[in-house]
Length: 511
Image 1 (cartoon, rainbow, N blue to C red):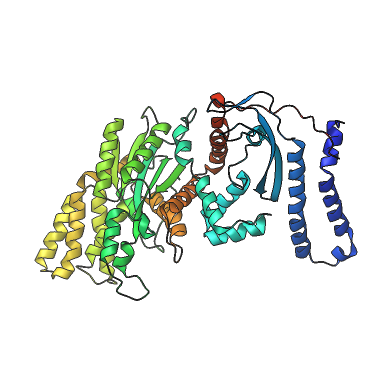
Image 2: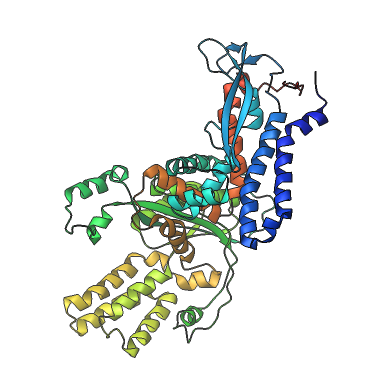
């Protein structure tokens, strides 16, 4: 005899209702009345997981076995006319549930399950919400910590290897997500559009090092028994290319304003400057620098297809990076103002000052500030020539002169990108603080955990997940990811990509 829907649901949800009543009865008991609030809190959480699991199980049961409402035909063109009941498990954030549903098959082909498509079940044992939780935890800390956190805060126990696999699966639609995003409607963002990139090394398993690094590592020999020396560390790293795209309001300044900001903290004037907007940061170990920078230009094009903003490329002077930026700017037919990071310039000038002054000598700071001010005024060539003449007149020893020559070379090699007086007058940024912060937060804080040796697939997945969260895109991405999983796991397996619908509910009581 068929049951009315209301009576059927009441029957299916009976176990969940009994569990809820049991929890309430305990909370009313004298035993609970003697417990501390933290003990009660833990108990409610633990029993709550089982209650929610039973609620979830009852709901899935109420959906029925998923009888097909039409002929089931696969993408291979084969009609599936054999109907059999199949059962599978699903580990959720509340614990494991069991799902009984009809499978439609034929000889020599895989069965199709319309209810699986209706529920958008994953291929593996773990639910998408559990995958999402694992992705968030993995993006924050070590895999072992993620395992412990999932065990503590959900009703599921997931082993480390499975957590690593869930992270990789969670990140697989990263490129597709950013590739399909439409331009922002009615863009009202700031008028300066900045593109910046840098590199950061990550210690890898030897099999996943780039070929040149792998050969260098194989040639090297361990000089210390346990501790890696500086050169040995370098030969165990693969460079990640880190990129950032953001907009910012113009901030007009004078060279003297910048010098005041660079003064020692006790003398420094507070400066109110516009903050970066709509910042997107990401990193890749798998892709070449040109691929990542091409993605940065694509992101910039998405934001400003008419090229009405002021495009700025912030660099640290890396020759390969500069070559790529010029190439991409030409390809996109955009006027790109390339700016050498002023903080890098400062570091070179400070090192050069050691050729003329002791490290703690007060006059050293005056010397540095005078030359930085002249560089900001567009006199980099004169500053380079002047410090070299001074080094010659003073007959500096080679070890003292080395930093002077390095600084002069750095300035002269990058003269086209040192027009700071023009950049400041136009309100353009002159420092790479955003990308420096991205290298630290996106890469170092997670990838440099003590003893970590990364596989390429695992590291790339973690970098992508951290990038999504850092850019504020994770929630939007996850909706897209689940849709892509539906297409891969279900729609693509049916004829013409159309899943056969499930017939209306008509369950019968099972005696």
